[in-house]
Length: 301
Length: 321
Image (cartoon, rainbow over all chains, first blue to last red; front, side, top):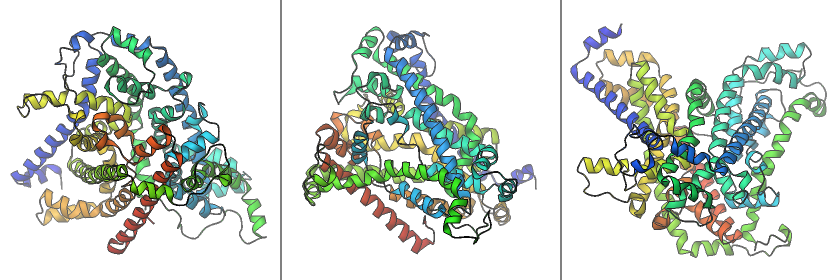
């Protein structure tokens, strides 16, 4: 049955349904995209002109001044470095841990398999909470260190289960033949299984990288007083909160100086874009992986 | 669901089983142990050890003393918690926002997935889907910045739009009015996560047997009827599993949105359990009391999860574990 034949057969009401579906999806896409484009346009528009309002998705008086202004702000450069570093280190450590644990769980002859998977599953549902964790970090002397960004999150049960589901799909005979050839379990993992697991690794790699890049609360809680350990997201939070409201513990003197040269709104928009761009450049290319990975992790079987 | 794992068919051991005792087998598994035990220990430190910290809720916390040297106060902290008026305000806010996001965060992605699933033009479908994920990848800090810009009284898109349509005569300070706060948080969440949450439903829909649709067409079922009678029942297991997990997370709504979008003017509507704990724990250093808040939160969450799991298991035969 070809599509045209079906279409010719359908009554007008079906075509109205079709039109409605397209209309709703187009409106949804606009609502999703417009705020980003609006913010981008304002960030590229002359800041005194922006105050007049009426900017939609195109800058009216194009300028790069707002970006130049934020780049004079030292802390932003530090923030970029730290954010990049924690993203790289944190994702790498997370990938190693998830793939190794997943490999042992996918090995049906591993004695500890049942224990380890239950042990990890429990961590998905039971969490101690913010304050006990804060005290732990304090007791471990991890306040004001870079380590606090990357070490606590190394083992993620969710990521382990995503990779493990993927590995379960690799024929077991592959390993058995390697075993007969005398390879040890680590070699099998490293040389044979890992290369075959690339799609799953791409998925959790993206999850890890996004999580690391977007984190700001750990900086606020543990490293708020260490200027050299500040992250981009935290700088954004500081700037956003500086004119709006509450908690007086933000160190904003620096940024206030910058804001006196261009309007605060333009600075905020420029930083918002600057902070989002790296992730937004990456995700469309990893789409086929994460769609698959998300499905593997949660609805398998 | 892969959450509580483990029920593969009969194990096919790599090495011949049964030969030698447990120790021999353990030795054969030595690399596997080396590859998993360090991480087990790691998880112990960062997820199980804080649970041990719950003891602080029953003590008078003093950082200078070891756990066994501190004074025990029994349930005093919990008694204080249940007598604190703020606690009930905080619970109201937490539950209101979580129920709102449970309802919206549940139905909207399903509807979105249903609509997307009906689109036959692949290029359009792919574009719409790619756009829909976009906000998922930016941080709540970025979203908070965007939301407050959109809602702002000077040239915010929402006010501009509503005034252009004539629904408003003058701009509203959305973020300064407590009564709008829950709605703003819920809608921001919907804006950020709808596309992402729809992924799982779309994947489940792709698994519905095409013959069912063919048969329905022959019977003359309209598209809407097909959605209702074939697609939705087809993804029922997925919906139930995600429903159970969401109910388990009802009380764990996080605090980022509330922290970033809230301000002093709306604090009576924005303060949720975690922020309440944060305020007592970090700002005024009442660690034991704050731990009691966190512990209450986690225990209720686990109870909710088991209750939801049990109920759904009994009535729908679907469950997480």
